[in-house]
Image 1 (cartoon, rainbow, N blue to C red):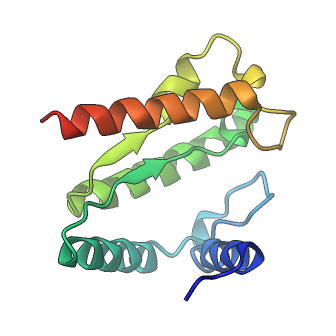
Image 2: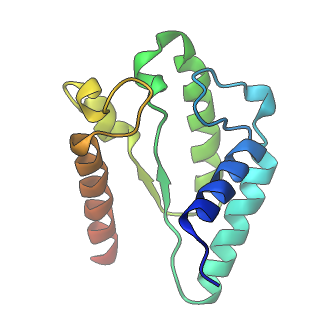
Length: 140
């Protein structure tokens, strides 16, 4: 069954809300983050993907506010640590976009504007990072 683009968006939005990852909000409320649910979802995705011979990769895409809102950095770092710990525990290959974004000389250039999606330069960095990681993984 093919799901429409709005249907896929709504499903992803609903999942993020259930996990406590509110779309469009700058502050992260760690009391609303459901890490056990997140773990169960990733474990099920890993199991199903492995069942048909596939390999699941987890792409960590940090929130834009993490780089522009110093007062929230601790919460974002906490969430990143929790997420990466779960991914590591489940032995899911990780593609972490935080290092290449944080090394960029002008992070604001990677976004169309504050609070927005990536700019063409940002999407290029994301795509190149993912492609390099997948190529490196397939050559092992």
